[in-house]
Length: 449
Image (cartoon, rainbow, N blue to C red; front, side):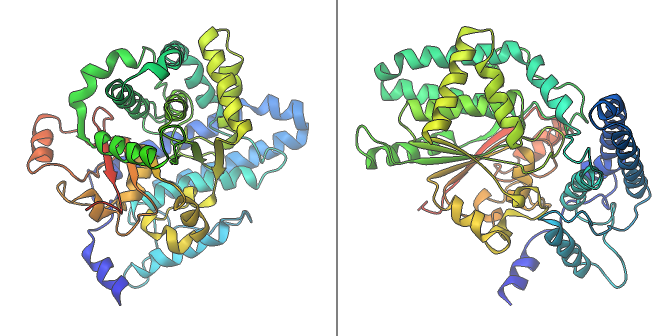
């Protein structure tokens, strides 16, 4: 009965059924564009498949393209959601979720692209892309988004060199920094990680969206674009953990739920390095996706590839960062995890029920950073909340540990604003919620007074 009360108390999901909204434009325009690019990528790799697998590879390429073309047609004609059939570990959970969505609809109406929640349908498209590849050995492990991710990394080389050089400069003086100076550097590197989230290939439908200039240089000019900044609350919490551990040994475990590969991932690694080196944390746990996701999201393969690229770079400070990071992995002070829940369409308030093992793992953390827009949408349930509803409230009980969202706005959901702030932004910049120009650093803790 209590769950029914909660359900009635929350607003409707963002959906393409609301014409003219960003959700509607995404389903109508952006997702078909992404599917077309995926089809093109597979076709362009035809020779590679032939070289590696002979005619069998070419036949698999044709079958995958056929499935993806069918998927694109289903999307554009608002066909009902079809069950998955690839036998992967999460298949049953996906197929059960259709039943959940069906229960929310009237009568015989079936969940479909333009009627169901946007979050569900967008995740479903990426899962169907994965199915189209998985059903077609021997190309079943091909990452249709890998080319874009590697291109984005190399296009951001200058910015990566700059941030690695900055970090190595900090390493030399870390012991001499006062608490005030340490705070200043913490705030800077949190903002670097925050703005790294602008480099999102799903929002640009796969177009180049790399970082060209030094991120440190632009922080001051970007400050006024941060609509909510709780970074000092995060600092206070970490300092309290540090004090509890004594002057030498911190006790804080920090988890980072990753978003994009490429430049953003490097900014996350730089922040993680700083947290260890400054003794604000004793261990960092990274969480990535099990499968290629939302064009540029980080998988284990992307994570390991990035480490190798940084390590082998022909740049002194970049390479030094790479060796340090590899050392952290070997020592176990950095740990990488993935879990199927991150690529399910579920809101995070359902995690304790739908993925109790993952929830229990996160409960061991002292602070969780959730990177990016998709994580924010799942934290808030991707619903039509009023701008001024508190961040704590929209989490709807999801509190495994103190958590902080670092997000540039790319979807029409935003909470925790001051009265009138959202309306004022809408009057001066109609695309403020979806352009990626604005950002938030929002903190919530189960221990707050």
